Amino acid sequence: METILNTAALTKHYGPITAVNGIDLHVERGSVYGILGPNGSGKTTTLGMLLGAIHPSSGSFSWFGKGTGDENRKRIGAILEHPIFYPYLSGAQNLRITARIKGVPEKDVDRVLQIVELSARKNSPAATYSLGMKQRMAIAAALLGDPEVLVLDEPTNGLDPQGIAEIRGLIREVAASGKTILIASHLLDEVEKVCTHVAVIKNGNLLAQGHVNEILGDEQLLEIASADPAGLKLQLEQLHCSVRSDESGLFLVGLPEGMDASSLNKKLVESGQAIHHLRVRKKKLEESFLEITA
Amino acid sequence: MKKLLQIEWIKLWPYKAFRILFIVYFLLLGLSLLIGRSLNNGEGEELNKLFKILSVPNIWNYYLFVAVLLNIVLGIIVIFVISNEYSFKTMRQNLIDGLNRNQLFVSKLLLISILTFLSTLVVYISGLIAGKVYNPDATFSDLLERNVLIGGYAIACFGTLSMASLFAIILKRSGLATIVFILFIFPLDVILNQGLLKGCCNDYLPVSVLFKGIIEWPGNMIRSFGEEAQTALAWLPVTMGLVYIGLFNFLSWFIIRRRDL
Ligand SMILES: Nc1ncnc2c1ncn2[C@@H]1O[C@H](COP(=O)(O)OP(=O)(O)OP(=O)(O)O)[C@@H](O)[C@H]1O
Ligand SMILES: [Mg+2]
Image (cartoon, chains in turn yellow, brown):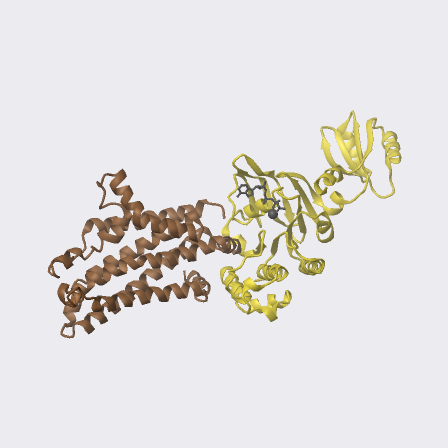
């Protein structure tokens, strides 16, 4: 898998506030990657840094394995926070400016207008668009030049259910064409519906990241520990258990299909592992999630 | 460069307020030439005949003085255009879409360069035309006298617009930036000069340099009934003008580089 984006200890302080606290993200090509967190958790700040608008206080990131260069952004279509336009210019004129900046031929403007079904209103001033139209127009701008990556910050914010469904449909279509999409959202439901991967952040801290099913799925997890952690780990892997975390010998383990806690215990004992700790627990993240989405 | 120009053009030309202010600016320039012609003193005698402000080459001293004052209008145009980019957040979007911070700065620099160029061109051509119309006997070489002052005007204009641009970039809001710009030009500079600096630095402060130093006020010329007038540029204000241009633009560049958008 080719890595599209990597961040290392990305951090932003605003005076005493730490908006983003040492976040490491890892986004692979073709994934729809959700950044999930409540209001004020640092999603926009994170994306702002990735898009060059905000200077990180420390840490680093790299797009396409090429670092932080400004040229990278021409391969990215992005909306940060709100749809942004010159209000007195028409939608089409606004898109023409974006096309110029990205070095995309002007005829692409008509193509993206068709995708978001705004061709009929392309000559009205952007100030006269409804919120839903603005969101769609912003997505059109992001689609200009058929970029490899889309970055969308709360793309369904403020939309009615139909508008939300339309935008999500649009995102799925784009994802189906193999593009990498990064979406910030405070809606668990949204991330579950459109994303393949998710990073959960709260108060600027990364709580977890990984495949949506792993992180948001409701499979059981086991805490297991033995006197011989290395041997235990090896055994667990041979039994096709997925080791999620290793806190100094205390393993958090997901079970394969058809196996439960007692059958695992039995197998481990048979193979000579003396388990001194075994506990079934709900997913760690689900707990934090209840907090987050409350 | 060409790309940035095209982008500025697509942005600005359809902007009504921009066009209106621009037209108002040119109307005021034209009006100053007509007013100079028609002002009468108490005895009904034409001021122009008395003080020879529209005779060639004195017309340059008068007209460039007016044009320097009207740079305030151009400055306000610049403030509106640039602070809009902040309040609409389009500056940030332009960056996100792929411009780098140097390009953001250069596009603002292009804006003030083009306004300076257009204004200088219009002032020069209309000055030549007015000179010929008001003085039908003037020869071409009469008209070319004191033309070096036009260069001084261009420096004053570019400096004023650089200052306006810096205020807009620092303050981000058009109303606030306009007020500060105007306050700075009128009372603040004087207060600074007389109060704080005890009048020591008259020749060095930006407003004095840009509005009075490079193109001198035609007071002397009027008092001497058109006999004494500025005929050349003085090196000190010109140098100071260039220094301020460098300083203002460096600061603008620095802020655009450094500040989060
Ligand atoms: N320019 C700023 N100056 C000071 N604090 C800021 C600034 N921008 C953001 N913050 C703070 O940083 C934190 C993260 O804000 P951010 O906008 O990134 O959150 P978010 O996850 O996008 O939230 P939302 O879901 O509401 O959009 C907040 O506490 C916010 O107050
Ligand atoms: Mg946000």
